[in-house]
Image 1 (cartoon, rainbow, N blue to C red):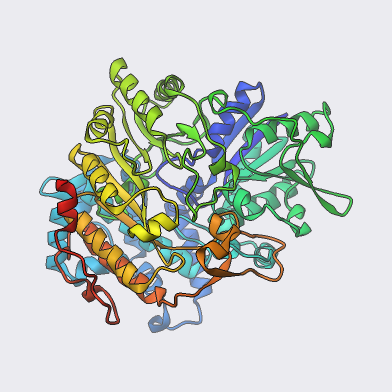
Image 2: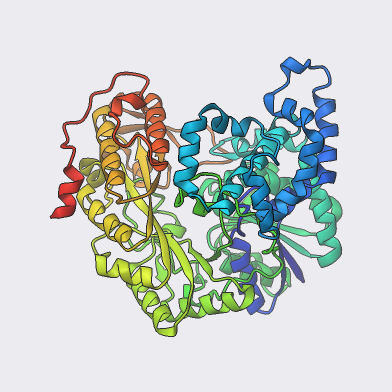
Length: 632
């Protein structure tokens, strides 16, 4: 019985998403034959070749044949005008972004080599300011990074061509996200799957043909980490059914775990046989045992299936989940680790880590040791069930992955890495003389003293991320975050002083948050960045989910939930009414405008009102508030 695990488009292009790597390692450890493929990177690499561009221009010409030149989208007009030059550049640029042709950086950096489309407009409209920004970002000798940034803009132009002229669902890190994200109805996805085969789908089919020849699988397992993977996952499942109707097709992953827990639409089972929730190790073991004829369906764990006209959810609670110490080391065997693209989507040195570099991904612990934040899905297994493996096991997995991949970069993808294990791991790395580079997500808590921050830096930590969220002490207490702004200032400064880059997650629109509190949050952020407490951040609009304390106990947060009348498909985000009326859309635009400039080292001394389209009241906060916090 051979299993093929697939990651559908689109996810990260610089490094494999870890789900199939973990499951492949575990299932092989149990004696099962398992292969894996990352269809996101392989799909893009199929499209972005000279042959792929020939196919794309033929499709685009057919799709816009009735439009005059002045009616063409800018991306397509540029594509037509510079096609031969784009075609000549595409494969060398891909090789450069794969790290296989570094000498090309000199030609790319000259800005005479690449045809520059709409994504370069910002560089052309503000030449002096951009020149200053590029100097700030790359200095005089940062040719490789500058070229990587320009090459990424070149690819972004081509992605716009695919989106505007070939497949409107296609984006660089998501595919058909709108069809799946918090959509209570399966209709949009189902109708899209019934349409004529798209170019993207045709490319996926070609890849699957190769996989089936190479692996001859009996089982297909598809992970769906995000809403922007669901359309691709079902297109894959649909074609697998055609290739071999006897195949068993399984679906799981983060999107499934959060949004499909109350599934009632039977049409999904036209494409898949089993849908597995939460950690896949135990459900897969029990399902495989059943498929081998060694057990009954009554022994399935967290598994949906279709039986005699009904959706059945089987969850035998006699079986425990596999302990984190026993899940084994992920393996990247079967994934094209030398072919991923190191992109530079943003000049900020911390922000670019998510798209630049090939990282071995590991988890230090399962779940979150805090598990209290009211905005978080703390009722779900991936948060609520905390289980650590211990520093010895983590270091052993680090060494195993270095031996397998030859690469020493690690991204710890925990919800919040436990400090005690982190510190023990760091000390063992130092004691063993291991030279690695790593980063991960933490909670900004008082155990991270300057001395401990330096310990982490000495072990190879180059960056950390964590949530400051609303940057308001009243709201931080309401959301049970367990930190204060002053505390976060001191902790992040400790990391920064140790040479560690710091990213923070920010939130606006939390229940009862006033406009004044939102502007105050921005002032805190401005001062924190001015004092180099953190280097990068991201604002997101609060969304209530049915699995979070806000969604489960709305009265505590003075909101009224407005759930859909009927949600047979995705059921996670829920609309709500807040008694405090605030124009969050207007504020969000200003917050993001300010933050974009701050992350590029600009505008930190400008008054806050300049970032907003409407008048706002400036907060009564001393200009040196954070500076004073750091002195106490």
